[in-house]
Each structure stands twice: as structure tokens, then as C-alpha cells.
Amino acid sequence: ASMSPPTSNVDSVQTFGKKKNSIAVAYIKRGKGLLKVNGNPIEQIMPETLRLKIFEPVALVGTEKFKDVDVRIRVRGGGNTSQVYAIRQAIAKGIVAYYQKYVDEQSKREIKDVLAGFDRSLLVADPRRCEPKKFGGRGARARFQKSYR
Image (tube, rainbow, N blue to C red; front, side, top):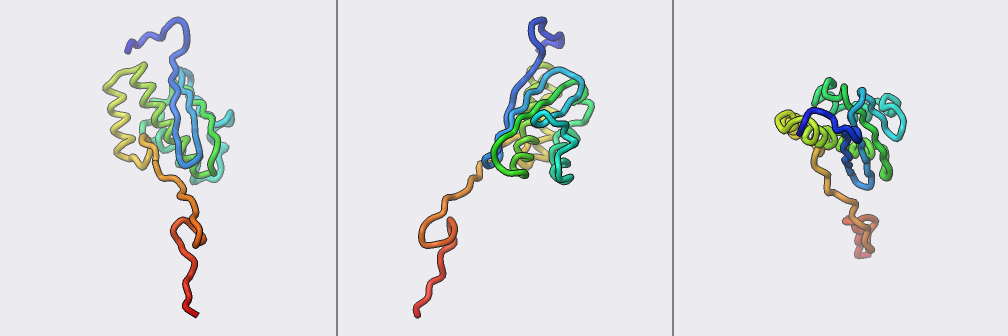
């Protein structure tokens, strides 16, 4: 990949992260270090613990790698926690894709190794889904109690 930006459009990649029913789409383009989720700055995400989860990929890769890119994320579906997991996966996959496309293979591999070493679903989607409830019980596996009178 060449270092000079193409004259026509700005360098950008689009990636997604998924967790349960949440889908987060991240647009990563050359910029000045913005991080926004659904148009709001990432600092506004509550509760605190989940906000830290979102900063994990940024912290692992190092903030200076995010200095010259803007990250805009749209997320929908699912609950709070699964949305946060989808967001952090989208960020992680996005920065890897951006470095592969516009920087060089070497630094992309370094980033990927760091994220994968920390892993817990930062680059690979978690395939677990909710299992449907069946009759004869109150859940997917639990059965009603049996009595012989």
C-alpha cells in the first residue's frame, strides 16, 4: 500500500462487530483522532466499566495509532453489554483493516498479534446464540419437576 493518499476520496475502511443481536459498524478514515458512537463522543458511554471495555482495543494498540484516524460507529440491536462488545470488536477489526489497506503489512501484523494475544473476541465473533425454549420445561434445557404423587 502506498503512503500517499489518493487524490479522489479520503482513505477509509468499514468494518463490523457482532455479539448476540448487536451489530456495530465502524467507519475508520484518515482524520484527527475522533471516536464517536452513534454520533456521541465515547466518553459519554455509561456505565464506567463498559466504557473501559470500549477503550481496550485503543489502549492495547496504543493511542498514537488512533491519532490520525477518525472512528465513527453505528450500533443497533441487543442490550448494553452486547452492544459494547460489538463496538470494541468493530474498532479492533477496523484498525487492523485500516493498517492493512493504507499503512503496511508489518504494523498490521503487530497490531493483530497484540489484539489476538489479549483476544477474548476482539477479532473473532462469538458464535453463541440464545437457544429456543422447548415445551415441558421453563427454559431451553431445564425441565419441570417430576413427582410420583
